[in-house]
Image (cartoon, rainbow, N blue to C red):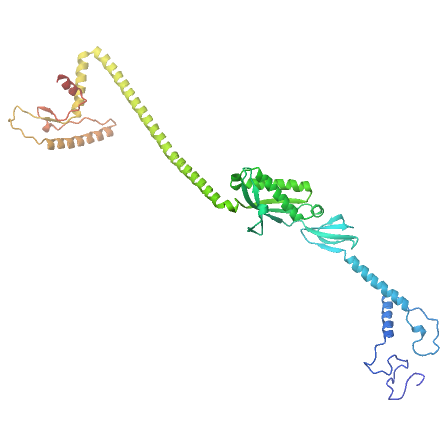
Length: 435
């Protein structure tokens, strides 16, 4: 039992255990510091197991023959070297991992080698040599950037040094505008500009001052605003390309174009006066556009009426002359017949256009009372009915309606009295000649 290292005493705290000496033997738990040597041995053993190393054999003999002899003592130098190698490997991995970087969509990565641009990278995961060999910087190339000239953030927050400009007619004008741009070359944007946005702002201010200085104030204020913005954009692009700044100007927007505040009231009065003048001119032009065509139409109508009357008179005269020539030819052939025919036609024309009452004065008394107004009205009604009947009969027969009308036979006396006489008839003319 002694050879086996076992003690039969029940009071022995190590009863039934190995008889090897313990560093903390005889000590109660929690008393004294931990065994550092044992901790170091355990740590080295774990490192050896991790890296697959074995403890070298020890040729020294333990004279005491008990406990851990020299053969079980750990190799301190090898453990230190293994620990240093592990720490160095971890540090190397961390150093190499520091060279990785991620470029977001719409961005471009620029890699510097000892401060000089070596190459650019696209979006995604990228790697470079860690510091101090290489460094990287990401640039947003798809983002629309904007600089403000003449104001900051709000139009009311004016910057007078930037907005006040001189026009060609030596007037001062206040212009506030914004420039939108994006990058077309990220390397030029980073390497050729000291202060990128300030460079774009100064170029925009220079360009618009040149354009405004070539135009008059009224042109810039009103009808030429779009042209000024377009020419400013073109001039800015030319200057930025000459500087190789890597900027692409998208648009130039004029936010406010007005006179200085000191003369704003007087300028508004002048503008209102000009607007009133234009309004009155437009009203006068509208009245002229209304009156002149009316007068021209009336003049044209009078000319056409006069031309129609002239044509009518000429045609009537021509027709009368032609008819007279025809009558003359017939009169030369048969003078008596022609004379009687002309007399009958004339009398028919006269009687057809006059109201007549025939009275037999031989058989009557000297006192004669006739209701002439009733007789005339009755005769007119009868004449109208007869005329309508003849017109209907003529239209049914296909002929022309008759135009002459006579009184009924019971109203025709033996004496002819002309109640109405046309002053243009031949009989009236003869009566005037006889008187």
